[in-house]
Length: 321
Ligand SMILES: Cc1cc2nc3c(=O)[nH]c(=O)nc-3n(C[C@H](O)[C@H](O)[C@H](O)COP(=O)(O)OP(=O)(O)OC[C@H]3O[C@@H](n4cnc5c(N)ncnc54)[C@H](O)[C@@H]3O)c2cc1C
Image 1: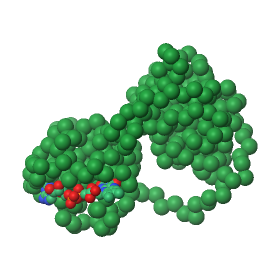
Image 2: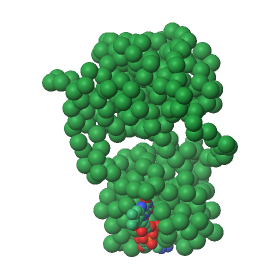
Image 3: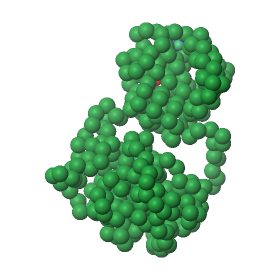
């Protein structure tokens, strides 16, 4: 079947989630055409676009838009889907993907599944597995429309290399009058930090740290490990840490390979955002802290004793590399 993948770019480059989506699309296509579409105001170079062939794209369409707005991207993606007769459209289930996927499904009268964590089962129809109830359960959904939109969960599917460069061509699409109605007046980009949503390693801390003045050791550990920093909701609410670090039901949902939770109790609302992490390490002085129930590794101890020891161990490990 023909598959179209939304290849989201940032400052002229692709992030890991795009390579995952293209690799996934290649599997879904089962020999059909694999097309990637990049719609951006800061278009990557043709070489960067063509490199998506490495992950399985046969063809890459590029469409310059006025501003990187999800509504404009959705219009282009829906037009491209018609153009290439795509049966399956794949986006990453990230900020933009979550806006784009439903708009494309409406435009194409397509079935949609978000938070997808499996390749489709096509033995009897077309069904996928997705996370439900903030990751506490799984749902198997059948998509019965002729066209299907899948928003796949980042950090779930392996990147597969091995293809050669894809062909690159321009794609012109008409963009609806509403697409640019929301204008960003300014963008403050967080500099020099690993974005939480893309991080493979996360060091997170909670109210057990007592105050913002004690975050130096959290940042030092994160920096030594090459990890992003995160925090619990009360910590962000008290302005100990910026709100973009708040994970959980009302914050960001993440799925890193390693989540280190320091001085966080493990309330259900916190777990909703982090319980899909591949390995969870909990450091808490209370052996009864609920977080230990979902931990792969637990250290019962005072963060102010344990974290400096982890920092020393990380330094030794780094100097040996
Ligand atoms: C509608 C709703 C939505 C919510 N959404 C979220 C959300 O998205 N994210 C979120 O995080 N919370 C959320 N909450 C809040 C949540 O219920 C908890 O109150 C919150 O997660 C607790 O944060 P905490 O673990 O940092 O603090 P606490 O509950 O105060 O826990 C601190 C922990 O640190 C340990 N500790 C203390 N001192 C030390 C030390 N020296 N060394 C080691 N450990 C120590 C304690 O034993 C304790 O387990 C929500 C609540 C509601 C009602």
